[in-house]
Amino acid sequence: MNEAISITFDDIAQASESFFAERANVVAKNAVTAQGVRGVAKVPEQAALSTGTFDIEVKQGERTNQERSGRCWMFASLNTFRIHTMRKFNLKNFEFSQSYPLFWDKLEKANWFFENIIDTVDESREGRLVQFLLADPVGDGGQWDMFRALVKKYGVVPKEAMPETACSKNTGDLDNYLTRYLRKCAYELRSAHEAGSTADDLRAYKKDMMANVQSMLITCLGEPPAVFDVRLRDKDDKLVLSGTYTPQEFFDEAVGLDLDDYVSLISAPTADKPFGRTYTVARLGNVIEAGGVRYLNLTPAELKEAAIAQLKDDLPVWFGCDVDQSFLRADGIMDLRALDIDGLFGFDIVEGFDKAARLDYGESMMTHAMVLEGVNFDAEGASTLWKVENSWGKDRAKDGFDSLTDEWFDEYVYQVVVDKKYLSAAQRDAFEKLDPIELEPWDPMGSLA
Image (cartoon, rainbow, N blue to C red; front, side, top):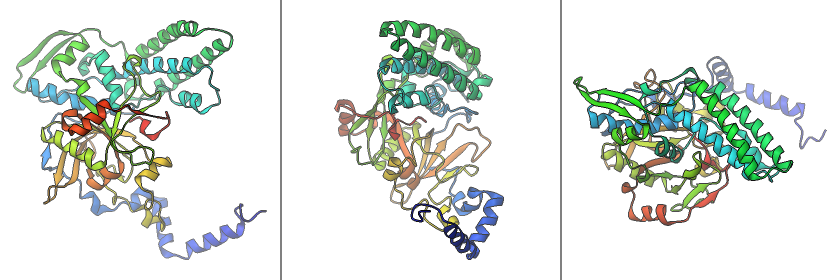
């Protein structure tokens, strides 16, 4: 045995003896085996930071619930839309259908996947690119730019026009079987290419494949309405909107935003992504004709400044983050000191691993999208705590609302979406005029909320 590279029994015995020689280790073992890591590492004083009172606060309808699906980016986007509908028609509450964009996103992602497979038929199947494309072709996650593409093409509908189904509330089986079918189709397309089929031939085969995808989606989610009737009553029970609409007409009437005014700002301090530059991610998107994504990389302070400017105009802000880091879910607080993991285990696990290193080494990326709806300030006017509308229902935290500290924002918020009017002239010029640097498909800034 080479003791320099192998685990020896002496190593094991010495480590075990050292562990049990410390009273704190024994106490920690007994507590964690009974209550779990987070239950024991929780710092109860930090839970008190979660509050229901904010200096600036956007008020809107009841909490929404994505159930057992990965549609947070859709819920967050629609939760930024509905405030315009509620104010325009003086509504107490309103909710858009989230199964409606889910249907079109799956359909468009399938087409995006097929086009990428056709484009890479000469690439090695064992290579990183093709294996990446096959890994998760129609997962639930997405980016703001992808949602904008869906709405511009397909519009929106009220929840009543396309309600939830068992498969929209729990997308596991739909995703699994649709993914299996797409991988089977990828095999068939690549095999046809090897047998001499042209790109035009492959796209002809794709038409039949897409018809099957649509059939599966209708089976699981129902058919999206081409037209629907609307009856909206305001807080005083007065009929304020009545008629028959297409989804595109309803977006224009009920929301009326110019979606191209909204831009994605990211904050990634890695050496390969200088601040002040624009970026895109290769092969990331859903609607083919809409293209991919576009970001402007700024410091966390600049993201906060833009978000606060929009909140001051009484408008919510879509944002993406790594939600599970230092998060007390039941209490609804995201705070760097919420969990004392290093104190529990007795050595550095969390400390000494900064934001750039976490991105570079696969420890962190955007995993969840929510909505900023408030912020508190200290005596000097600096932000301290942010109000967050989540999409996990109302029966947790503060009526379904979470809070995140300013320091947590610095470390784990990766993206905000704001109207470009809240950017400086230099920032707008950078977003609109600079040619974006293309990142690899597997770059952490290509992660989907």
